[in-house]
Amino acid sequence: GGDTRLFRTLYHEGPEYIPHLRTAQSLWRELEHDSGTELLDLTGGLMLAPPSHPGMLSILAGVDQYDLPHEILSVDELRSRFPAINFIDDEVGVWDPGTGVLRSNLSVLVTAAQAEAHGAELLSYHRVTALDSDPDGVTVSAEGRTFRVRRVLVAAGPWATTLLPELRNSALVTTKRWWSRIQIR
Image (tube, rainbow, N blue to C red):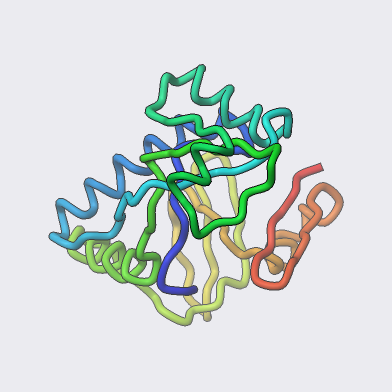
């Protein structure tokens, strides 16, 4: 939920995400083209940390590994370019021109409309009650209806282990105020 989400090209979580982010950006642009709707606005973004911080080292590793456009700014350069921000003396900044805003609510609506335009049947407010997989695909049970599909992407958040009880011993669902994540052990 929410109108917007941050989109970044440089990731402090690790350079291994960068190929996925490049693919995502390409797919967002394709959806924009197909729908005639602007969804991703790359405004540029600033990431800050001490130079030896693990997150900053990860960002710089991604810059080096993928030769991504960026600017490294000293604290003096940061203060000159962004005078409204009170920077800490030992901070450095990395300007990522590939950072921006994704219009998330609009993106969901546009994606659904494009899916329907390409033959998908959307079932809003149908609670999935079971997933049964075999080597040939997955049977999805939802509100008394059954569907056979090749693959399923489960985005159930904290309900994932209710839907997939076999994950109870191998997945830990953590929840923080507005988000949850599943960590596979």
